[in-house]
Image (cartoon, rainbow, N blue to C red; front, side, top):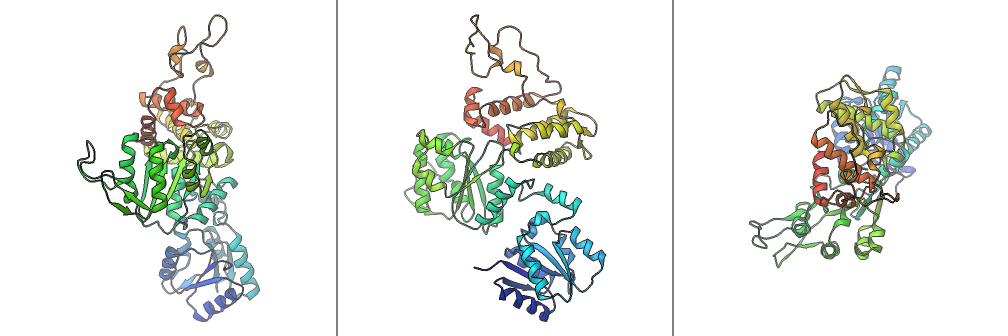
Amino acid sequence: MPEGRVLIIEDSASLALGYAAQLEEVGYEVSVAETIAEAEQALAEGTFDVALLDLQLPDGNGLSLLETPPDMRGATTFVVITSDGSLTRAISAMRLGAYDFLVKPVSGTRLLTTVRNAHDHKPAQNAAEPEKKAAKAAGFHGFIGQSPVMRDVYRTIENVADSKATIFITGESGTGKEVTAEAIHAAGRRRSKPFVAINCGAIPENLLESELFGHVKGAFTGAVENRIGAAKAADGGTLFLDEICEMDLKLQVKLLRFLQTAMIQRVGSPKAEPVDVRIVCATNRDPAQEVMAGRFREDLYYRLNVIPISLPPLRARGGDVRLIAEELVRKIGREEGHEALHLSPESLTYVAAHDWPGNVRELQNAIRRAIVTGSGEAVELSQAPTRFPAAAMQPPHTADGMAAAPNGPDRLAAQPGPLPMLDLAGMTMEDIEKLAIDQAIARHGGNVSKAARALELSPSTVYRKLERWSN
């Protein structure tokens, strides 16, 4: 197995061959590009650990490769090699994300040491300070932040992206399970094929089989035309099954058969069809407990849980929460027509101190409420409370001091006497509905089904609302 993959971007054939010979001798796999265009093509088609970059190339300045967005360069660490040893060039290269800067002629020992160190280095750590902060904000395939727990997740995604093995993502509601699935798809060789997501909890049980496997015209009432289904639509790409533990046991049997045979059978069709998809699934429940409770098939669990990825809650991600909050302020501010917003010092303190039981979704909603209801450039999160006052959550009591059962587990209206006044100024009915659902989910540990039952709603209704609000 090679030590790593190195791309040499050098128009001098003698120098490129010299670098390649030294690197191949110690076990590196080497490719050579003579122009910027060839380098861009190589980076688009393959994954390289290190790129040795000459600055004077036939079709332009090599620094232009460092100016491309980080997601286009992938996880490649750049080392600049040039005959021009000016400090200005060195600073420009480092600011653009280069790990090191070497001046020709380069000794073999220095070359090998630098490549080895660059191979062990992470690109997100390459940039100088304000660029470093910007790189962190940009994150990894849709994620924001570079905390140690998230770097572990990123490494796992990179390692498994090209595999066909099934991935089981677990984590609390709002931790980014679909973002993880999309990152796995984008980082792998299937990136040019479809990514299809289906929420197993948002679709009624009697329609889920049709949504997943498709149906033929006339298979049931309402089947007025043929439908290929999510599995066939994702052929060649990735099928993401969100909230997999919400799936009915009967359909779990059919899913297991599909995983074993790679064949689907549309509802109402006698013919099976081959499908080539990479399966990624997710749940905010504990799948092992669901198996023990008899709600999830043990054989399906082991079939799906080939590569587990556990997403940390926001409260375990340290400084990431501030980076995420600042990025959300910029993003939501632009959506709402405010370009120069920033979190106030008090809000920054609150963001760092709050435990965010609803994770990124709760943080996003809190920031949106504060921007919509606030004024001025400083965003004050205190203007929009993210949870009901503690008094409002206390159940009514009987004369003997025992808690009385309310008419519906989460109804404030069950309390005797006047209701406590909540600060709802400036909030729309939809904002209030979001607040009630977010808090119900948080109170039930991220379990959407339990929260839906407590609110006397169907889980599919809650999932549809969450999906709409996240867009």
